[in-house]
Image (cartoon, rainbow, N blue to C red; front, top):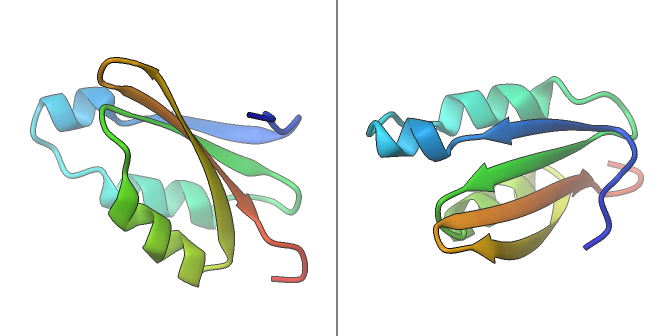
Length: 81
């Protein structure tokens, strides 16, 4: 997995452990990205539903299972969107 040089990193594992919904936090992070930046998301599971939501907003993703209950997903804005 290629990690972009400019990114915002967000770890929602503790939020989910505490049964807090991280969707708004994720959307705020995405909306705050500058041109050329990516979002690196850490989650306890592969966030498949989020892939569809961010795809509609013009993001591609790469997901990697790093350890049990630790997924790293890099969301990058598609060119021209």
